[in-house]
Length: 165
Image 1: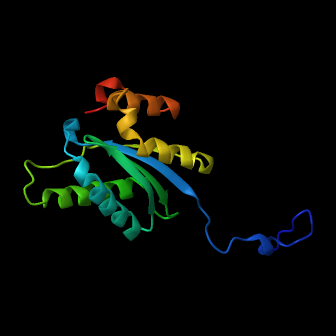
Image 2: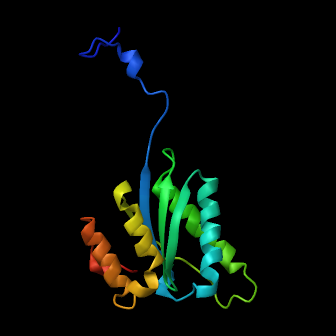
Image 3: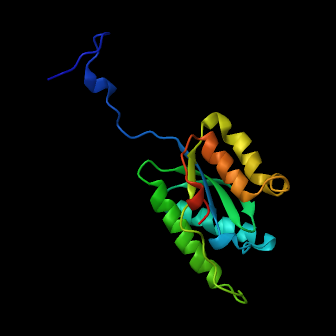
């Protein structure tokens, strides 16, 4: 059975041969108990390592930045990859990598949860700037205030008792 469009073309002509997706996600998560584990001199190598994890999964890390107690990631996902899977892989592998560093005092851990927010293509440049300027931003706002602002901006309900663990 052939479907016909109003213009008279068959439905076969308009079937997609592949999947098309532009899935842009802003991911935010903290160190366990917001302990300031991410030293400034280690941020670049940590972000590079996270970028490698993303690439292995078919995703692209477009921007990364953060503070000693949390990280922001702008990621372009492959259509077959879930946010939960990628974040789980990033957190588990980067924790293992950080804990293998010589001279690490104490055990590095990420918090259990995360925030993930969809991003419009038209907002990428503004978000990249925001992520790059975390030092400036957090001179005026705590991580808790920032997280609440993101949740409200994206209309996500939350219970303050469970916000930061």
